[in-house]
Length: 177
Image (tube, rainbow, N blue to C red; front, side, top):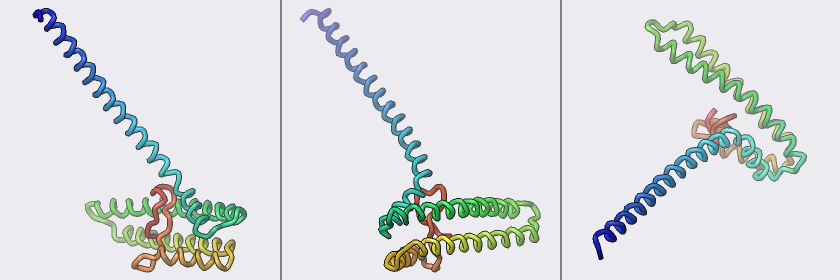
């Protein structure tokens, strides 16, 4: 083999290796970008699906008829709207509490007022939960009421507080309220 021919073969091998490496890097970058976009879409979907997941959960667990399901959607919508407002108030109150505690001379009167407001919001959230349960109970048959009771009983945590779905954002997860 002559040296010119050997150099050409080496050049072609190097060119092929460069293109292979570039396509591997490009493919890796493309898939990484697509994965990031998919993750963002999934996160958005998780933030918008909880109500529907809850609807499907109760529909499947209680075997709700179409008529009951329509009524449940209204009950669930009312619960979500009211509970979401209370949750937003509680979040703001928690932030106010931390900010006041962080000041040079925290105002004990203001701290007591915030504590009272937090308590009032928790009471209101419990009342909203009671209304949700009773409204659900009203649309259920006797057998479904027993199942509904069992569902709520299973959601009790160690403090005997009901874990209800967090309105709005936690992927349909149940949490303490």
